[in-house]
Length: 404
Image 1 (spheres, rainbow, N blue to C red):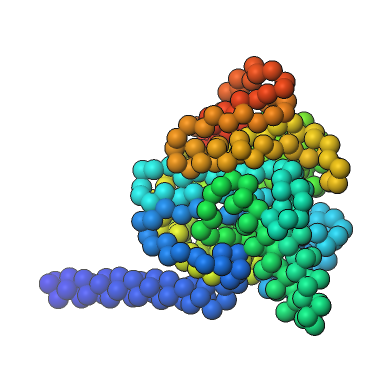
Image 2: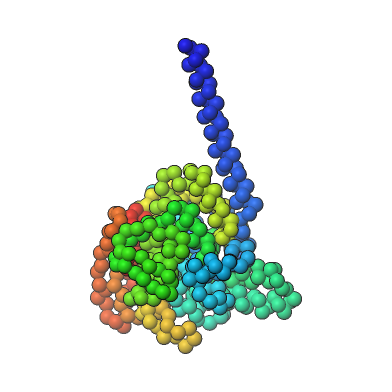
């Protein structure tokens, strides 16, 4: 009997040891895959400072309207049709621009600040004032002209031009917000689709049914899970929304809250199969700066709970600003934005005064699917708007807020 017990114990110990070794092997294998296949940028953050675990950092997260993967290879036409990508006009616009500030220690909130893609701001490099989503493209086209003059062609031309585009965007955001950006990450449309599929979908909630032929969105009202092309359509829609680009920001933040829940859920990052899928998406479709250690970043993200991640939007003026070069844009007061971003990142109150028409201030903190926002209309005169101490919409990742 004792021999049988000892044999069973030894067998269980051996199996447990094998499981531990297999897990360690999985981690090592995924680490090697990231190290060897990750596409990195050396121009986005030219002089990255070391950010060891336990040190706060600010990252610029970008969703790029690109028809290529991270390596510059064209996406299949059938995939682009399924994504409702539309014609390729070679503009390389950034549909999503988010500043993410992660605290040094657990218990402090992380904040994500959205910058509307149609924000009318000065583009770095004395390129004039344009919609901020064009900064990447301006950097690319300027570099292409110079590089072609030097005889650079083919894939090297594309690589170096993209690097110039990233640096132009980073510089533009730094000049607009006054923030120092430590890290950079960029994902294309196909990567976004595959990311949602790798996570098994992302929970969202709609106040009413939506259908839009431009983005391809066709979803019912209420809580639901979206993935693939449906998820991309959810975050890209702006036609049919009352405030266009500004309402799309609310969609993106609500989606990001659901995405954060999926990533931070118990077991997601500990599941070898899920991690393999995520690493595959990252190595194919994501570009990060060469100084960013994703493992260190994930170790800090794991310390966060849903309520520790807050989503904000920079203060804006009128959403229908007529411009001489870019059509209708979102009005921006640079001083107001810098004061707001500084106050949000440091936790001190902001009191900026951008010009433009007043906007309703909504604060959203959802406790579960179907939760709604509380809304307080702004009462300032139409000639002056006092920037709120919070963004027009504050969403936390501890619930799934319903949005339009």
